[in-house]
Image (cartoon, rainbow, N blue to C red; front, top):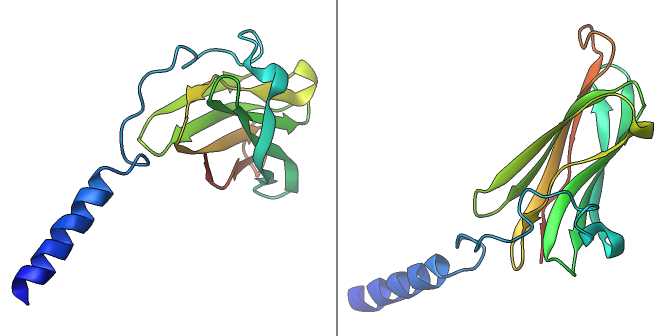
Length: 148
């Protein structure tokens, strides 16, 4: 009986260790590049979205996790008031991440650079500020994970 339990445990460990969700992805030629300048954003789609919640003001914007099937990449986009500034993040299940700081302007639409995420779970996050950022003039949002 002990041998059977040990064999099952070793087999499960081997399957878990070989899982693509935990393997380091090969670098993509699109890693840390702008999705629209590279052409990857042209046929992209939203795979997850969430509200950006202000500490005091309720919903202050939207965060979207984008996917380009053409380039096999994810990135994060936000839509906020034009007076907001902040930082967008992209994360992959194998521990890679990227961030991009944005300034007020651009019609309130901002995005970060891409990470290759073929056969990989990914999610996005954002922190925003307006005014001085103090007294509740800040917020954050995170998308759920999307797994390709």
